[in-house]
Length: 535
Image (cartoon, rainbow, N blue to C red; front, side, top):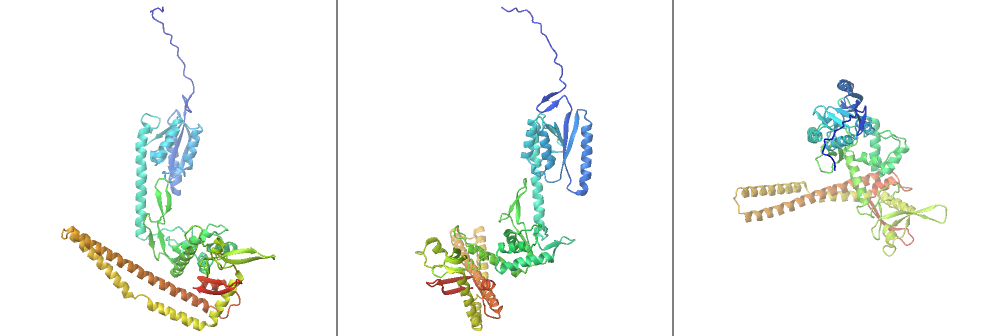
């Protein structure tokens, strides 16, 4: 049995180790301290700003005998809401992960990150390595007690500040838009430079190239053909590249700046933290400033191009598997249709018995579903060309009679056009019904009408208003349709009058100018039996 006598305790002193590594940094040795700052984006202020912060952190760290200055990491004053653009910040984190830094000093949470998520992510990542971040303004040491809780609260406030600043900036920009003040970047589109006052002025050399693109498109060329032509002519793009792309041509043809206008807020910021922008498809208002600067392209020409783009888009169709791809690579693309079933003719290349390949055009229904669905046979491309030459020459030989008939049709269309006073009558009727609704609502608000009577009257007036609005819309469509037909007839007349003799061979430019759709019916020997050209 053990004795209850007092046990003499032996105490041994364990001496302090000169260096003990704990979680990646040395205790008992000097801490390797880095400083992080952001400097002004203004080139004149950058040097002074950086020098003053270097001096500040050199003095601050130099006063501590237990600290050694490793480096001062400085990014320019881009927004702190995202870390992806802050190369020095990321380099500093990499040095920390490599074990070369024990502590970071920075002025404030907002300098370190205005995004709560990013701030906590990096603080925790560094904390796991035993690396402290000290925020001077807030007097927070992330390794100290309560440091992370304070950091969460304060960084959330910093993020709100960033959101508020974003809202203020956005508000200021919108007020500029509404007042017609326009800031346009000229480095991404051809045709304009900026003068000393920041106004757009025409660059004539580039403007001629813009006019060429619009002209060639209206002559029937596709985006791809125009792009290939510019590349072949060794013309540089706005970014100095040798190769042109069809998407660039499409963008040029849609750019409202070429007719002197400026459409503002085409894109919007969807996330104030990432600054990600997305096309504005109606989520926010847009602002169109007309006559903002001198045009390179007449508004009439610009509108014609938009109409032609829409026409070609309609020919492509909206259903999968039924897209008529527009291309001027082949003259009859999306223009020749089957006289039997009405479907489009498609270009095909057959191998003949000789060394050359035979180009034919064939009904899409026949190709897809066979002769039971459509009996139209393939027709040589040369046969189509000869048929158009004969058709045009027949018109040209009877030019005066044709023009007389066409003119009479135009005059008849004008006579059938709704009169201007009909527009006024419909507008007045709409305004009257709207006033009746307002009066009825006032009666209801003042309790001057029975609810059942009110509901019946409201329904009746609303139905009448909807009906008149439909008539007004249809009236407008009729006017636009007849105006479009008249313009189309004028283009056909211009094409005929541009010739001073009969066609000796197929002319693609004349064909494109005159023909919108061409319905061809074939004989048994695949010759054209008859054809109807719809302008």
